[in-house]
Length: 149
Image (cartoon, rainbow, N blue to C red; front, side):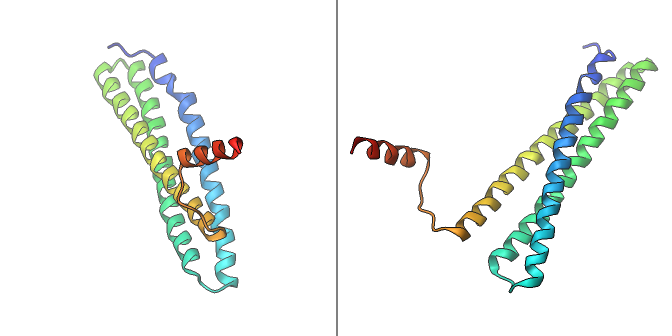
């Protein structure tokens, strides 16, 4: 496979958009931490609040790793372009492969963080209302039964 300037350049907009999304995720978590900090200082330390704080700490670490790997992937793309410019073909191929692997790792960590985020939202919901154990199919079935009657 031949690598040209266009090959790593294709990742520049994708990585930039990912970093923007990761930064937005981090800012949302930072705002949530501030809100929970206020609750922690005002109210008693409920077990739910403590679980949310632990979850947030893990999620913030995941976002930090996501951002770090994204930036590393971006740097590797720049190094790849310099290697192509300097006609170091083998170095360009290896550095570009590292860039792709770094981007892949960042995306996998992002998926893990999204899963934890979903669980955290579930904790919030379970605190606000008594949830029945249901799934998409049982909800759909209940909806169809209501229409028949």
